[in-house]
Length: 403
Image (tube, rainbow, N blue to C red; front, side, top):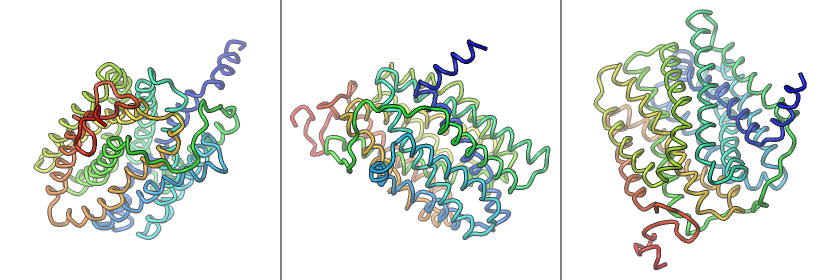
């Protein structure tokens, strides 16, 4: 008993334990919301591709407004803001099933999204501040593994809820969101307020020397929407996947990432950000091009799994920024970068939702083009990025060393 008490006492003094617990809470809400979304929207709210595109554009508006985090920090510490955001995520998820209409789903999605995006912004900032550069990539990988483990439990429970227990959408949404609320309140009560190594700027920070990081972040947001919005929609609309099939597919993704993500983190630390990003973007070009022409449901499922694995390599964008950043810029830039990430994300789902009605293949070929543009940018990342050596070629076309 004494050993357990000692272990718990030591654990609550470690900020990474808080990060892991908060990370585990997110899938209980967001993964339930995401897994049920396409079927709930189509079966209960009568959605088509156009409404789905609009919904995802609305979902990304809070992400676009993530720069406002820096102003919230004038009245609230980052750690507390992370927990408040988790509460909003949980509440938004819990009530989703009780609003089976176009307008109702739009409103609950925005509430859930405010919590999700503000939490993700603050989590990135706290991790970059609390974790040393030498351990950051591996820590991010472990956080993905924790998230994947929680996702496995979530997807498994969703599958059991529908396939075995025959529960309704309302009950599953309520259970998932309620668990997020419980974990957020427990973390609030149990953990102390951890100190931040460097006092963060409380104003917006946009520095010319971070331009490549901003560009990579922008393109990452644009590409990610193709996967988030339309890959899953393809499975339901074209290949008639049921809720339990989508849940099992997500379960497979989570199981692979739970094992692979920490190894990807260590691989990034060993390879460096440049090689990791080049590898990711070459793979995404191939995957998106294949999506455009796939006619076999099993091949499509395989592409979905591979696509999901590649996104773990995006850790390299975060650790690239950590290596070139002024430590006092991290909180402000985390909010700004989330806004940059969501500029395209606000527009693409609605516009591409209309394009989907004309040609689903064109949507995925556009994703391949975006990945190609990112690949060109990745070649400009130095092998050893650091302040004063952020890029190989400057934004004016001159060698960075000459600037």
